[in-house]
Length: 411
Length: 155
Image (tube, rainbow over all chains, first blue to last red; front, side, top):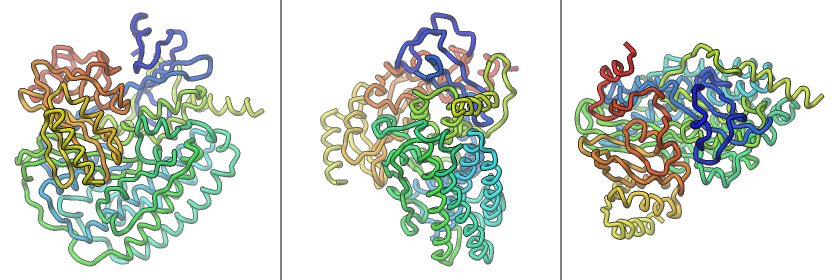
């Protein structure tokens, strides 16, 4: 990336403006805010970012191609490994897309269980994110508190599915096994704790000075930008547009246990903090409601080994927004084509807009604020890449820089 | 709303000389490649339509099938077109719909369909910069991972 010639440097990046080589700052592929590689060309005027050109693909492993050579069932476990945070969103999206080709009715109890695990995953994903924002804003206490609390949700997920991360739980025709006995009691206790903590954090993120300085008015998205670039999930909802797949196009049991769509108006990172905590509280309510309402019966129906000829487009609301699957079957034992569009791919252009006008010191917080999952976007599992020596800025240095910048600014 | 948009879509298909297929979860409009951008822009301005979810490319053998998935309430409106492999070109819709920029660039990289007017034309989005120009794009049916690895001197 760094060996561009002068000619190449002058060309318009994402086609939006020309820039001179002096003001160009290569950023990545060692990503500043998560341990995932991604590359951003930042065009600066002094401290101010005027243009951002993303270049993705550093962890692209060709999972869509690999899927064409694996059987339908094996693919469930392949797709689950696309993301280490929202693995269940991938597996329910794929299994429901395949079930929709037939079409196949899943037992009611299985629909409820899918909802329960999907909402637990939303809680742990949002908490993970909140901790990271704390870390990158220089508020490490928050990071440690939140990640400790997140363990309670992971324990609950392990109790239900047998695993904390790659749950391998959803399958064609339902879920692999029934809920454990007395899960209702345990969930009520754990979620009661999470609710208490989330309420406290909601108060904290609105009153704590460190976070307010770093997030208020930072990384602002307007409704106009949102309509133009169509981000998904919290990034869209923080501009006041209340769109959510769970409500607009219900899947699993979302037509019976209805979410309340959370929105906020400011469109900055501070409003994302409150918005995501509101979603955590709503998810806690939904899990408890679902476990009370859940009907008795089988959790899995026999699903044919081969899938009819046909195709289906399916989407679910993953923690980061709309996760889209297109599955085409030619009637064989392997899929003809599976296309995946993850939320981060849809949010990437919006993230570049969020960065514009910010200072270099804001980059870690803004990029974390969009809740990126580059591994998802490149369709692989997450792994570390050794630091490249060619670049002057590493994530850690930039974090220090951001904290120092605000310390000096605030005196 | 569903009714009116169905009427509008069938009118649109007639106007562009395409065909319309209505399913329970999706409505598919099939048009020729030169009409596809026009169809996409017309579909995207329908009231009640949310956004372009993504663009899918599929290798059908002699053609590359391109699907534009638009999300509308409880279903998808899909604009479908077949681009011949001999001339894999189509006009970009990124000017009118900036959200299509990266989706087009992805199809361009992985299936080798050029989207005229896309800002990523001539540059890579997903593939490595040293991906050999003579190697087939990786999602084409004739792409052999072993051969590509040899071409890239990875073994």
